[in-house]
Image 1 (cartoon, rainbow, N blue to C red):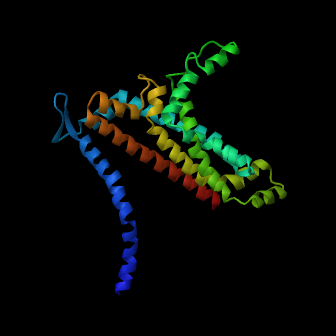
Image 2: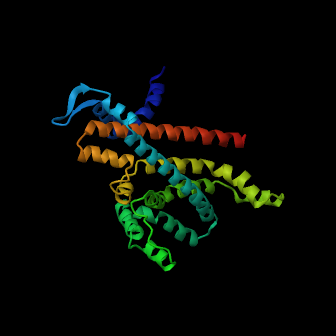
Image 3: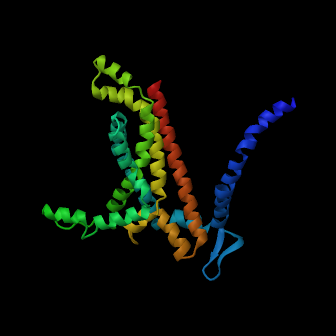
Length: 288
């Protein structure tokens, strides 16, 4: 094998080397240290004991109904947020793709506006809107409906998460729609296909990659969200991220917090990979 051939094969590794080193230093090494910490024995008097390992933290999480209930709440809330984002975000992206400037730019700015504000600021804003004296209850009072407890409930968390996550659904779907030729839709309509059939047979298969990407992003971010569940859910309505925070900073049980965080990571990966395989399989079948 010539020297030039060997050099050509090594070039991609040299070019990607800095990125791989950065990825290893910032993600893989901390993740490995967290995994090791999750197996350390914890002594309430002295803290984690390096060099002494146990599976007790994982056994506690999988056997205690308290932790199982928190994981269940986290995943059904994340799934509901993802579903609402699909139902709202996909049509919004379709409308956005059909608009012309300057209205497209205006609507795009409205969609991206939540990303320009800190998530903590948005959470405080929603807490004021949904509180007992907030604008929502004020409007309900004008309609003759008594004060409704919204703050510190699952409803408040879902509303705020949808507001935060919606751009992550709209943008991937909108990107997929940019590849769709409007002439194909017109051709289907000219062949007496109904608008609903055109949407189902022409548009939907083309935007499925965008919906899939957006769903995975929204679900992953919602399941690991901390600020919104912490501020709008309160101390009683726990989600997995708030439990990790409590174990690290309140209980100082770092091994248990690390174990909960790793279980959340693995569960997230399992759900997202399963969803990806299911939706991608149906998408390929529809195209075939």
